[in-house]
Length: 184
Image (cartoon, rainbow, N blue to C red; front, side):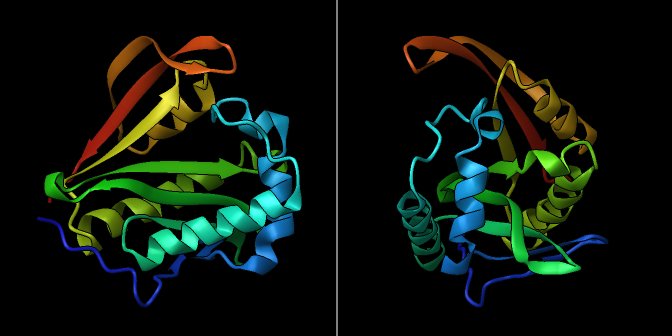
């Protein structure tokens, strides 16, 4: 079975990004991110309504890190590491199957700049080499063409398209599963 340990918290650095631990000073930016209708459009969760929702979310994320059940990084620009612009994480870790799901969100002002792709390309080797995952899954809305394109550009393969398998906000939605296997 997979053994996971996020202590000490692993900071990841790319050419433009610092992926660091979320803290309560990120609450305002996280609230801006998670209350944005465009960001939440394909997440299938209601947008946050108050700053306390962001504070609670940060607590849940950091509890998961402490329990070694999932990890979410604050995505920041290296030149401004105090300002959260998005999140990326590995969660729904299934230790007995060496598998995790990747998830990410980014503020619209940073879209179409390759930043999510850059972050994914840093999280993949962490997942495969440090965590020893065998596979990473992306579970996305079938309507989220940008996310599908980003996953495909980082090597993920679409494995499934489920028809109306997810019920949210009074309607059934299609989802797609992407997967990437550890070939090393």
